[in-house]
Length: 371
Ligand SMILES: Cc1ncc(COP(=O)(O)O)c(C=O)c1O
Image (cartoon, rainbow, N blue to C red; front, side, top):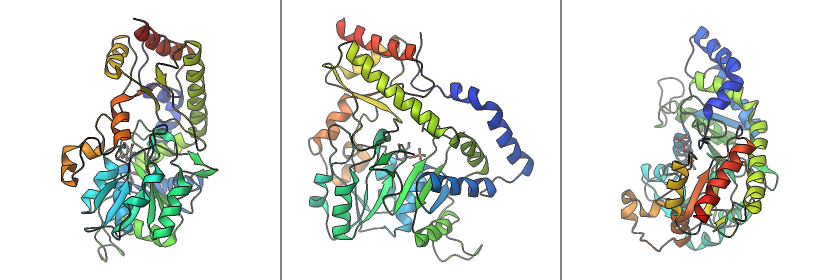
């Protein structure tokens, strides 16, 4: 048996006709940039994420960049975020000439630890970017306590967390802006790159729309310097079809997570690995990430040889990336992020995964530990 980390072909097979029909309409209209599909998607994503507005953009990375631009972040500003996230979170801050300021993570959720934030706030702090990693929301209430106390914006990096909830509130609806990615491996994935910014502020909405088209308003008149951050009509057409299935897929991912918990318990593996916890509400399991106390890389090789896909998200925390050396952080500064980078392993969790396949994944892990 072979179990890939993700099987996009399985998803495609189920909805192929609808996807082909939706993209065919775009080909027939020969209208590829923004347009009605993008507008329809923006309306539906705003509704899905409990916000008043959404702005389709070219990727999750650009969603972060344009949000920070809309917030007026630039040289001399500081933005607090997690060192244990995909590069784009801190990359967007640095690209604008601002300084990423890292705060270590919680050991169990891998998300930023709100307790560490207050002591990192300075007069230059303009924003906090909590990252809802792997599909679980950060502990937002204490983050807002700090943010409101110092008049700091909160921009959610919800790239991995569409439909995740914190105390009934959807990811992307809690901060001033929420950033989403439609990268193919996300729960709602396009046929290429795509992203979205959600907001309930009319002012930010208007500014985001202008920044998306090089700051032009009206056409060829520029009050602001923006960029080409537009979402393609083709990607919007694909995502509109997939959005109808998203809640079903999320339920399947959550059931798979539950099944892993049962299987790991039945096989007596709970002492060897730590399973993910769903702590603050609806976890959407973009990834099912276990912590392996020791020999993580050996286990990964064993799984690969046995036909089971896995991945390390992320092997090097951001404060230790060479490009952020100028920030002056060293090994030991963020011990929980460093430990996670050494010990975590993502296992297959995609919706079409069968119980039999999950049994095979867990049996392969058991075989490794009993060797
Ligand atoms: C947490 C996080 N932030 C930002 C991004 C960037 O999204 P994209 O790949 O669409 O640019 C990703 C996606 O990979 C992500 O996982």
